[in-house]
Image (cartoon, rainbow, N blue to C red; front, top):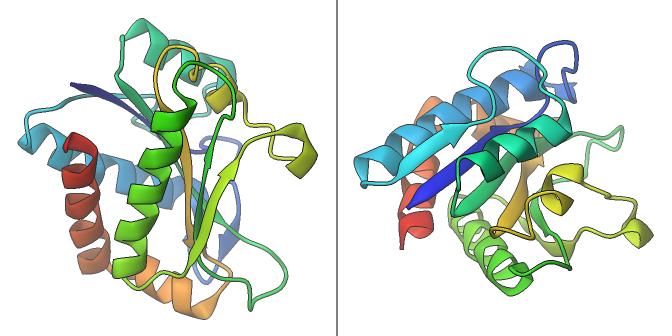
Amino acid sequence: MKIAIDPGHGGSDPGTSGNGIKEKDWALEFAARLGHHLRALGAETVMTRIIDERPSLSKRARIAVAAHADLFVSIHTNGVLDRTANGAEAFYAPTGNHQGNSKGICEQLLTVLATAGMRNRGVKPDNKSNHKSLTVLRNTCKVMPAVLVEFGFITNTHDSKLMSDKYWREALAEKMAKVIVE
């Protein structure tokens, strides 16, 4: 089994920020933890970035496809001006050969996040009507299950406190790796 891990944003694109967390840094650090646990369980991994750089969205998808990955997981955090917004959500492409598998994986990953104390905001299809046209999902979903997980709102005190805790991140990465391999 080969898993493509995509730490969102990077380089000149910091993503969102709040409560002392930058999305690009958080995503890269969590992706490394997840990759470590996946390899410990016997999976192969390929990362779309391993340093603070910004590969294009199309390049990220090409990396996963060229590696013949069995699953694409893009890692992100949310952030908005409304500091009461909280919780994790996951997106999948509602088209392609793997939409059912992608949706199921989203549900399983959100269950893990909910047991770790993060509110479950639900699984959502990536489509133009919800303005979440996610290139990485559209460009990978035809050849592998593909998901994008928003781990929580770094602009929310509760969510950012969890995400700032290195023990929480470590335990979460371990649990998510087990779910992915199963």
